[in-house]
Amino acid sequence: MSENVVWHEATVTRERREKLNGHKSFVLWFTGLSGSGKSTVAHAVEERLHQAGCRTFVFDGDNVRHGLCSDLGFSEEDRRENIRRIGEMTRLFVEAGVIAMTAFISPFRAERQRVRQLFAEGDFIEVYCDCSLEVCEARDVKGLYAKARAGLIPNYTGISSPYEPPEHPEVRLKTDTETLEESVDKVMEYLRERRLLE
Image 1 (cartoon, rainbow, N blue to C red):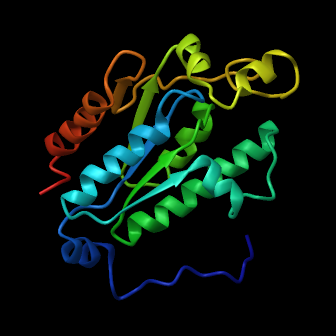
Image 2: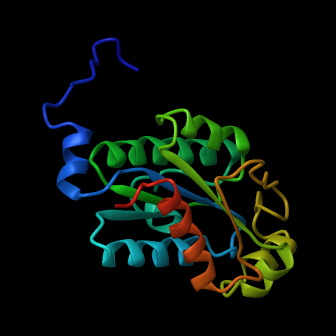
């Protein structure tokens, strides 16, 4: 970081933005294996929140790699940098008063913890899409797991690269046995219990 960079404090604060929006801002960080339902659940939660009048945005793994992170590959170092960038971006969105949601494998506990530390207590909500590898592989319409097992895709999470499940996620979804509606209901119930939604 340049020594000549100074954070500028805005007069329009996060609190004022939240008041204008009529809801708190926070990040829902969906994590899990490829095929575990992260994007599906995140977008379904966004739809539910949008219908309730909330300002939201979903950062989807593939979409972000088309632009913001198009210069990154899938080495362990690049994956760490991918998550670092997303963490910083979602922090800005929370400051803007928006409910930010992410749908990234984010396989390493240490990287998720680093992102958590960017936020005030309670602003980072880890949502673990807990789904067996067998079910994830069965859902794989792109055939990526098969390519990984054949050695055609290196560093593929769950096959040749580890996934470290959250030890204490705020929300655990059993996406291999729950319906989409049940998973969305669980997230919404947590938000209501935390009084994050009016």
